[in-house]
Image (tube, rainbow, N blue to C red; front, side, top):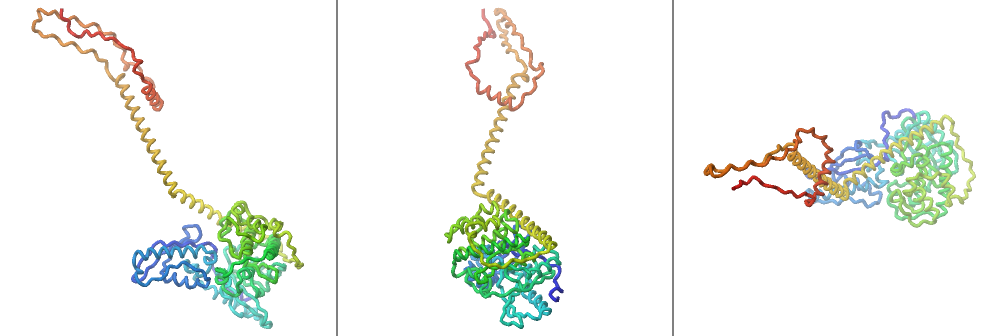
Length: 573
């Protein structure tokens, strides 16, 4: 088959769902315009970052392209006079940074090709529409019964997946949709197993899985054909959108926000849970549940894009569940995605943030109880409930399913083993990504806490206390040294001295004045301490404490009174 012949080689399998962040680092004025130097980073690793240079005109061009979303984006206005002044450039830089923050945090805008090309032109320089047309043309050479009616431009959110409206030559009124997709970063099946598994999808029969007319794959991409539905998807029903319109136009800014009726929520929710349970029991990984992947066929919901997990494509909600380490299996991913879908069916819009702190009024308290078991902070910390547990909850347990079609999906044992290994590899990559995000979050939290004003004040107070304590200890040590020096000076080091000798009398009149009697004998001198063996030096800290205690407890009244007899004065008889 021609489609299988020429796969491009050496491709880099990039995860397009990893968020890009952008920070304007500087600006420079060149002649009559200003350039802004922007640091762009993919994910949490600072090593995976690069610089781009953009002018205001580039921002303006991007903003014009994004007007299809009908969102009011905060791009700073143009200014013709005075646009080179320093104050104006600084103010405009702040405005452009705010604009970047909005488009990189909006879930749909951040994943669209326009924003990706603006921030990462090297990774998104390929024209995937042309590549898809080349593959589709090769396919038609071997399958001449089909032909392209029209391209369905940008009806999906994926950059590397393109859609075409098809028709059968001998049945011109019947419409089909052909989807072409590149392989993704989670493709772990061998080429042979992949081709076999994709072809097997057309044999799958289930009342809540949308029928596949034809499917094939090669070493680089896959091609799937399905019937076209004029009613569109469940998301089209919620947003009251036309199926053929571009994704940005249909879902970014709905004109009217309104949820579904309670009975619709119960029925559609039960049908989706039943098909998830079926796939889990078969050991078939899914992980791609969202309202645009659920086709409406009358009052029945039917799941789309079973091939996505085989091709290794990342999930629409990956940037959400990769934040929570308890969602680490594809079964848990499906349940988490079901929580998003149930919220959308109930309130007519996606949740503003995950986790959800409080829920608006709902048609039933049973709806809120299911949402609380999936989307609250406590649920995300403890882990997701199983599909079987959700089916037993009051919201879905009393729903009667009238469809009697018997499900059929035979997967050979060898392929089932390969799917199991592939599933484990997908979950391992998710776990590793969650670990990196968790470590980055802890580091950021620690840095933020360390740099807070309150923490800075605490550190200043502690530094003062430490400085004061060390000054006191230094003073005490100096005092102890001085006291020890005085004690040793009055004892061992000072020699004993005798009383001063009396001044001899004048020689005049010596014959008449008898000589002074000799002084009384001195008391026996105490033995010099210097002749004794000095005692062992006590511990400094203990000696210091004893010295301070002795000084503090000294009382003058305890000293003994002494009487001194002074015989040094001359006697005159």
